[in-house]
Amino acid sequence: MDIFIERETLIRALCFLGVLAGMAVWEILAPRRKLTVSKPLRWASNLGLTGLNVIAVRGVLPATAVGAAVVAERLGWGLLNRIAAPDWLAVVATVVVLDLVIYLQHVLFHAVPALWRLHMVHHADLDFDVTTGARFHTIEILLSMGVKTAAVLLLGAPAAGVVLFEILLNATAMFNHSNVRLPGKLDRVLRLVIVTPDMHRVHHSVVRREANSNFGFQLTWWDRLLGTYRDQPAAGHLGMRIGLSQFRDAKIGRLDRMLLLPFVGRAGGYAMGEKED
Image (cartoon, rainbow, N blue to C red; front, side, top):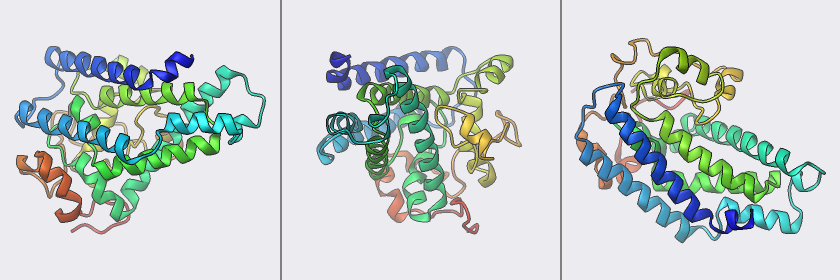
């Protein structure tokens, strides 16, 4: 287990590349929708932003969420370090609680106009495929890591549980953002627990009420329990438009444009509780 934690970066990188490659092949073999923008252009920009975010997190933050878990365990901080929970239960609790935290954070990024401006970068993608799952503004990534670190310290999450959560979060984010076709029956069964591509695609609809639903990245429970679940888009998955109504030019997907978007782009009335432009 110690080796698992010590080699966290390598393990996460290998899992990321493996899932990315697997979903990319699946998208070629069984695509759900026809893409509208040049894939090389989108992939270069989306993955370029991902690489920049990795560098920013490692360079700006003194410790990752895993590092915070190690510190919390040594100092006895957090709920799980105060109770005699079995190791396996602590790991499971960590995955479930952190998933709820990410769900609530996601809702917050839609509810607060200033945060929505950062999150627009994710939603402004005119297509929906595996790289969309890694397309987030650098400032949003840094804020998200701060939220996760605080949650880890308060929970007293074990490092192994945090590593497992991060791997699952990355893997499921790429899965549920993928442009892949699943049999209807399988989709219905999977989405009882796991967010599927058809479920999350609704969240990327150009229709505001649909974009403000299905916030889960990993588990579907929070959307169902808290009233943000939407089963299908009104126009159907083949008829729905992806992205934001105020950004329909493919040039918005360039790396430099994505970095500037929160500061120069129009919010478009998509933030929850905000009037339409």
